[in-house]
Image 1 (tube, one colour):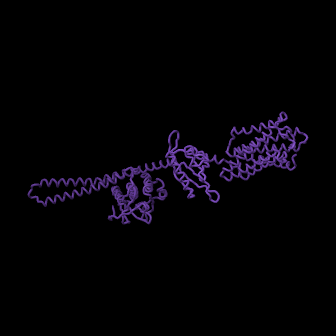
Image 2: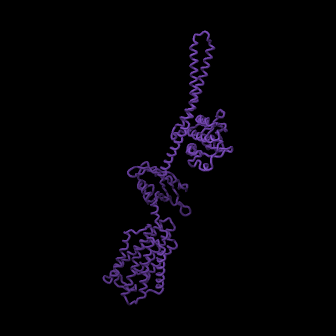
Image 3: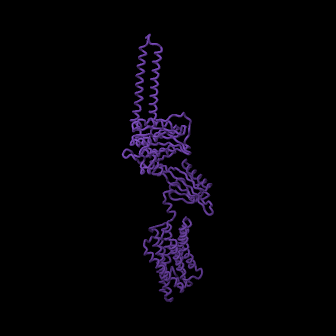
Length: 626
């Protein structure tokens, strides 16, 4: 019979379970796993209430005893089914119970039907009694017990497997606590069925009471039902990126679904196989990918540090071969005492990032081209004027030469014309020819400068050039604009050596042109002035400074210079110049740009290039260019 101690425990357990369910339901927002737990707890309450009924019923009233015993089966067999469902919902993170899971409830439902109809067939009890030593089980009782054992064992196995594979200590503790709670009634049930030891009718429900207590401890201490635990594999499978876990011996331990779709199927990589033996395809793309991965793993093993590299892979999508880019990071997995346990290879898909960068680069190139054309358009008028003067000089020189030639022809045979007279005519012709040569040289320099600026920016050539040549082109291209604005350009080299840069001279000319043009605009409002280009050297950098004495740069514009397209010229400017110039200096000369106030008034815009990209050469020192 049920002892007084057991009766007291049953009453306390029912009160505690009922209070817990009421409090939890009042909180609301019950998830699926909450509801299943409440059903399990309610089944245990029914079971315990039936046992209390057995305790309070006359032992000789076997009909009533049989009814109470039959009621207990609403808690026992169904309880094991609910435990399996709870474990599956917990591990898989389900919000809705799939219909197929309800099949787990069919065996306990059949058992309950057989129990209630036992007097008709005696398949559950051949002899029924409250004293377990007098009970004779029918053939289906062992089948019913086997099903319950399978359910309990499955619940234990599911939770232990989840706990072992989980990388979260929280989930690991939750899983083991749940498994222990399911293991207790499994052991007690087996002992009762096979009559191991002297166990009363209260033994099994007491074991389930321990289960409810352990699960309740998990709820309040580990917040198992408050966190909505998700299976780690499910979370990782939803990642858009790939991961691969490899042991220190090269055994493929685990990977997510995304890795399987991108690399696993293509290269034949499978779990529990060595990476070296997994790769089946021998094309060049596969060899490159596999070599990079294995060599990076070995480097990671030797250095015990993270290794990163970029990997391109050709994948077939919608029947077409598509090139994908991945940023791969190999991380060593350290266990106790910093011992190497394996490696985590994480494949971050950066294809869209690469495409965005390419679009950004294309847009920037287009902006640079627009700025170049705009700058060239502004210089056309001045260039035409610059060419007009030497052309007129050539024309005048040719007229003078023609007159001298005619004079020589008329003097032929004239006895009054002496050889000395002819020498004088030849000398004058030579002087006019020199003037033509100088004018042609000047025009050639202008044409060279203009031709350089007319070249598409995307076709710029990288070669060594002298900064003095670049400054000479600037002076030629902006001569008319400087004269028209009443400004004077001074180029001062304080280094006493010619500076040689590696890059595109046309790009440097465009940048300095832009800075000087801005300085001219600033000086216009002041009635003109002197604009200085200063060539200097510090301990680490070569500097090109463009200094003016204009109105300066407003404070609100200073904060945004070089960071975005902004202008202080109002409708007369678009803000492209400085922004693009800074990009050109960074990309093509590994340098930087800055701006500071001129102590004498105005502004100083500077270009700084590290000395490691600069060389110096001796040259014949020339005066300042104007």
